[in-house]
Image (cartoon, rainbow, N blue to C red; front, top):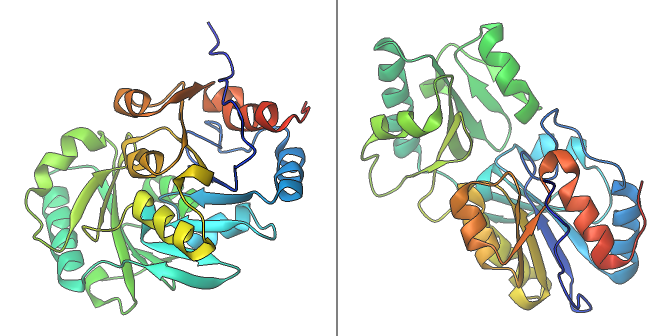
Length: 277
């Protein structure tokens, strides 16, 4: 049975809509559903701004949502961008990043089918260069370089991402204690992110709210996975997707149809009084 559209009530105070990408705004084929332009036009008329909040790289988000006024929370909250300018950054300590790379290498040497992405402000970097891994990585990293040695990369680091073909939940236990300067987050069925212990979509959303002179009472947020929990906690209208992780569904005040049913745009269109196809 299809999940009905949620009743969000009076949205006259709405000024900020934070939306996760994968599993939320994007369907399983990584496409934005019908009605995006109509919903964005309605938001712009009302002075409501869209925040693309994702584990994806800023360059990837900008390429997909290149529209005036869109705000970006990239790398699971490590980097916040407005109009091409940095609003906030909460990068990963280099020593912690290198420890993570070494643990990931040890897992692969022991037989794990996984690959590591070192994420910087200039580019993302990988050592594993087979097509099986790269086809999983390219959609998230528009700027991606294959290098011989991740530990030799010189860039301002934001996070380390690990893709495990056998699943992220079991893989997380192998990383153990990465030290006080790192925090591991399960960000998808196959993705693990290691970032600053204070980097979080919720922290980034609060940075944006402060920057714009807004608060949770002006904010709506949509999410589906554990890395979205902080963002949902800082929004008056917190919305989980029907396909969301059980903890996310439990934390949200509202439930929207799934990402494959265009749940985000249909929910926003109903709340804003817009008809979409």
